Image (tube, rainbow, N blue to C red; front, side):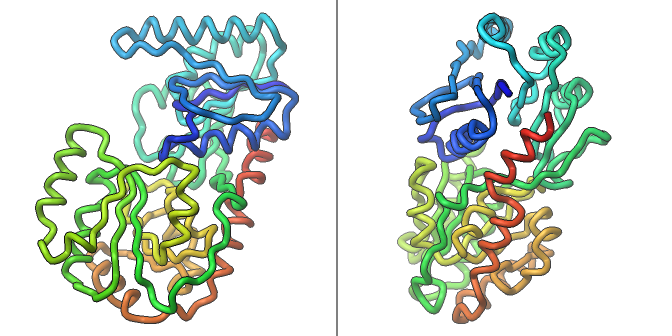
Length: 342
């Protein structure tokens, strides 16, 4: 089998999308040849049967970008016989691919895990042969093409960490800094608790102007006596995340996106407890509630739950957290499910 993968970015130094290289390499184990068409490229280390094409993206001229994609597709089809297309999140690729899929009678498999349903996704939903998503909350369009396959976490990269302290000392929030992540609420509640010897680490960048303004307001509102306890780390290269997580004792995720966030699953793979209000996590991990997974059904309960966690020793078995990821969200199992979709 020879397939083409389409994604936003192929860059091992990207905190948000560095995992895409792990996905590419995992898929490459199950195909003869894997081509990657990417809108942005940085440093990457891929297997020998992988070939990466970086599209000449023109943000001011979308037609030129489309033509660049068509040119790459034409080049690949001239040199090889393709079995199908896997589109990772980049749904607006689908209408561009569709004519090639019709001519060469190939399947388009779309992966999408987000609450947003833009027009381009609705079009892709019609044209794709199958849609894969991590959870039911990750895909909000009605279709009989949908298959729920879980997420893809490299459990070797995100290794099981040894317990550092009997009590939780280092809290972490990982991801893009934006209002939808409720970072302001997390910091405000943490500052109100005033717990001695406990630190909050914020890992991620504000991307848009609106997000940057949001971040500035957050920093201005931190009390002077807490500024040394709320630590802004900026974005970390994806490869550095596991070693950073290894120093953490609790991961917090209050994202309102609904889809299952990797910032929940990656620390789980390392046996790090999670405090979250994520809708998908609440639905999936109820059996682990208060045993490594602390679920916030209502935002107003967050302070009470966090206060309990930081004032009590870790008394639960952390192994089931990792076992949950290995059983249902491991990268190798996801790669096999993607290949079977063809």
